[in-house]
Amino acid sequence: MSKRTLKLFALGLVALLIVGSVVRALSARKSQQEAVAQASVPKAQTLVELAPGDVVNAETRELAQGLPVSGTLRAVNSAVVKARAAGELQGLAVREGDVVKAGQVIARVDPADSVSRVRQAQEQADSAKSQIDIAQRQWDNNKALVDQGFISKSALDTSMNNLSAAQANHKAALASVDMAKKGLDDTVLRAPISGLVSQRLAQPGERVGIDAKVVEIVDLSRLELEATLSAADSVDVRVGQEAVLQIEGSNRPIAAKVVRINPSAQAGSRSVLAYLAIADGSGLRQGLFAQGTLGTGKASALAVPLSAVRTDKPAPYVQVVENNQVAHKAVTAGARGESGKDVMVAVQGVAPGAVVIKGYLGPLREGTAVKFTQATAAAAAKAP
Image 1: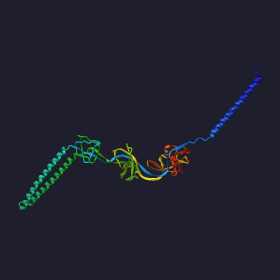
Image 2: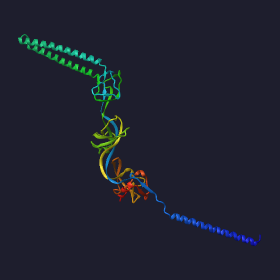
Image 3: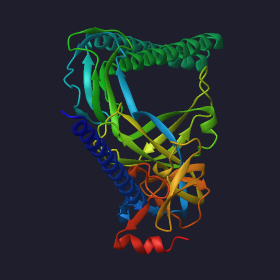
Image 4: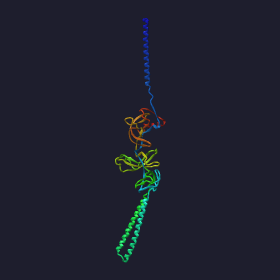
């Protein structure tokens, strides 16, 4: 190849390289311009749509102040039937859950020994009565002899003393009869109250001693809650205050009222026992666990639902809607209480009527646009 041809080839190659560089530069500049243009286009803003149940207005409300209480249900009237005489238990037929009436015979203790004591005491009383008759006749005879002057008056005094002693012995024998009959009556075990048998603590044919427990009876017509209060909480509790309880295993709320407060604190724990009467105890049982809230007073304050107060920042705050945007308002929480079915908390830091977003929606970024449904728009319009 000649030198001229090589020179032309080299010039052509250089020209191609220059053209390629220019094309690449133009392409890079175009891409940069497109990126700048895209960056200058505003991004679509996030929009949150709220339903009527998603917000609540901050309003002044009556807050029911409450004290948590818990304890075990107990029957106001209960009794344990005990044996009052020793012997073999007979005729015990009632079992747990049986209905008994006051005065009903529950069981008997073998009365053989008691019957014999009654017979013995009665015979001794009859013997003492015979001695009275003898002493009475002797005194009558001596009185007639004294009147006739046949014997001295001292003999009449002796016969009078004998008659008085016989009468005293007869009275003592009659008292022994009463005691023996009382012992016989003690062999019969009767229900002291009407109710249900909760425990049978002995078996027929078993030999029992005096004061041995036989059955326990409870009257479920009147139940009460025995609540243990701390010393500080007991200061605000008064007779007549009402409570709403939830019974273990039951979904229906139970009304109760404080009827008694123990005047003495428990040794050691310094706790105080309060007794709450159950208004409607139908279907309830002794020993069930109950817990609830005892109303101790009311307070009026600007309040929002407790769930609306968020704590994912250093200071508590609520999410409100202002100018169709989410705003965060730092608040100071105060007293808690119930208003209807909601747990409310008094707050400072929001204006009355502010539209507060409920807590279950979660955290929303401040400045997020908000759109209300038609039903909520009217409430939002009232907000400042």
